[in-house]
Image (cartoon, rainbow, N blue to C red):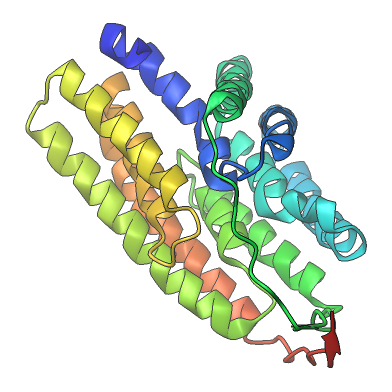
Length: 296
């Protein structure tokens, strides 16, 4: 709605919906209340990143420590898996901004999550069909070194952003953190998928802005992209990566042409750097031993 009135403000609110789009809308109403909690954690991590990001050495060390702590916590408590999946990447992404600019985006992230929760709570649901299960497989034995490899991917990506004097210093770090998985094969697949999808989203944004679309057309594209991200979050086609690249670049283009051209090149470059780091650091992983099947 806001996009049709003020494109710049509407783009900010659209960016605020990205955490909810990445997390996905819970299938049950009782799970909806976690959306604002995740949005608040995402926003706080983003603000903290923007503060520490002003001191490069401190930022790199803090990101590495946060990454190790997140993986350790996720190994102990399943509910903490949201930390390496979303909160630590948000901490890295905050280092792209400075105060007070980061406060506006953080507020948008929180508002977008609250709005997503309100819509999800009011949306009618069908009773899910439960499939009968006879046996399950115990989770694999965790790789004790994965926490350090996860931290190294983010820290090296962030350090490269500072060394190369990039405008968005933390995009490579965030890409590496989003891609990293304990299984090397999964990391390679995600690296290729996210790189291709992000490239498609960035190129699509460039083509759209090149045609000088009307504001209502931009609003339609952004709403469609967010809806596609939420609806296909579990898809293997990495629509979330393409959609986030599209929305971020359209927001940059709505701000100014110079901001768009900078973001266009850096988004592609840093996505490739992050993907390469995730793949290289995953190669040192030893395959985890799966647990024995057990009866339910």
